[in-house]
Image (cartoon, rainbow, N blue to C red; front, side, top):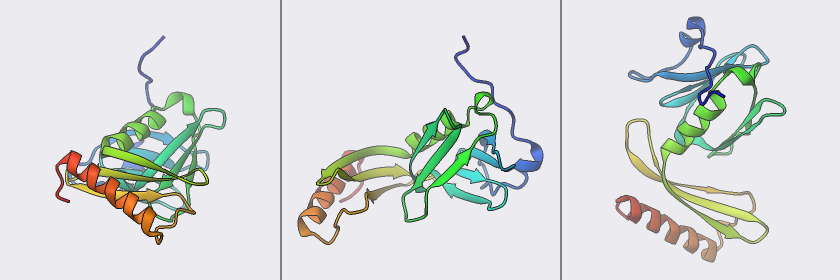
Length: 169
């Protein structure tokens, strides 16, 4: 039983289409069923094909992998719709694992708050590609940020994670 999965290398033609910042490096990739590629670099998630895009890891709120459908679903920190990426050969790529590792490496500390209706807010300190730390708040739909009690709980959580990571309040 192998501990590490060999990954299909990202073709040079695909690498040349990526919007890599100086010093960035491709870590893993997976061919998509529609013919494009999903690529994890040190700094960002890149998707090639019909609608190419590159977004830093700090823009990813969370992601999941469904091994039955070979689909990676990426949820963004902003209001952009979720991104579903169906891998052509999930058994031959380390992309889902690398995706998880890159998202986790951008999170320094996080606290999740529970609200009525099974809704949550997550307050995190994250590290950008250039090493800067910043706080970020992600809320489920239906969490009323205009409610003073909700806002106060989120502000208190943000103060805790900022303090724990050494950021000024």
